[in-house]
Length: 133
Image 1 (cartoon, rainbow, N blue to C red):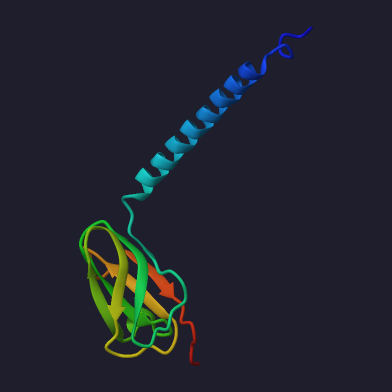
Image 2 (cartoon, rainbow, N blue to C red):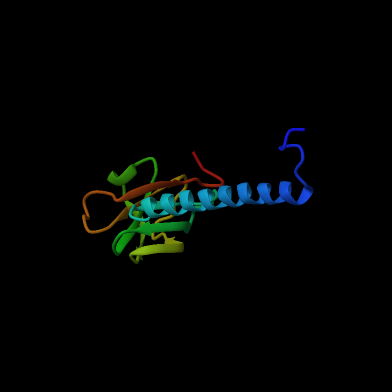
């Protein structure tokens, strides 16, 4: 009889547990390596579509250094009028609210500026829940 078939339930469970543990460890290492590589970048996660009349709330903003989020009407881009702005700290910022001094009637372009105030560090489009065209 083949020794592979003569294993007890205990031995089979032990072998499966060993393989499962190796898989978990490998997945954890990949996740940590991936997040470490991503940790140095700037980005904006806008979240769901919103009513953009008075402002927007950004779900997550990651900035390498202190910076500012500016909001523009998406049709005009960064050449258009600034609708509003909000400061962000270096690191992870959650639920960043940008209140508007001018109402937006459509999608909004959010731009993160850090140390270089002429080059965007990150951008994201916030979709208006009820756009007016």
